[in-house]
Image 1 (cartoon, rainbow, N blue to C red):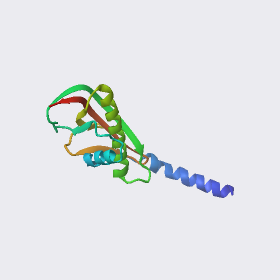
Image 2: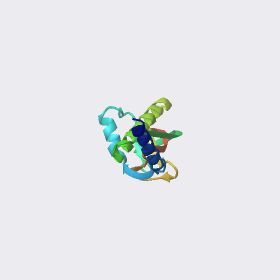
Image 3: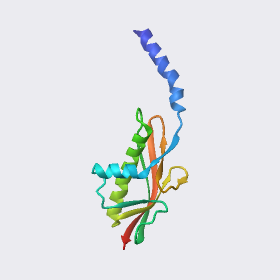
Image 4: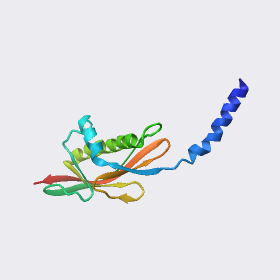
Length: 146
């Protein structure tokens, strides 16, 4: 029994450098897919609209506050897009709550800002590691007026 435990301990220790050296990879996925999925599941109620960088909403947007939000989720054994969309949905829920609290009805000029700013009109950036996936969004909470 001791030999089996010792062998298992050696095997686990030998695998640790590989786990600890696992690096993040950067991936990009469609932003709207996560928004639609979160809305259809009821996680987002539709009262706050989301606009990626350089997409202008109809009417005048009065910026109330600039915010940065970071969300991470378990990535172990999950496909990259599944874990990344989950992290993005968590960020969107927080942005919706913050917008409502600030009296805003839109989140505008949304950019990914993990280590460097990533601007795209269709995609968001996600960092995927061995155990965790994460997104960082920088955005402006705004009140829209026609």
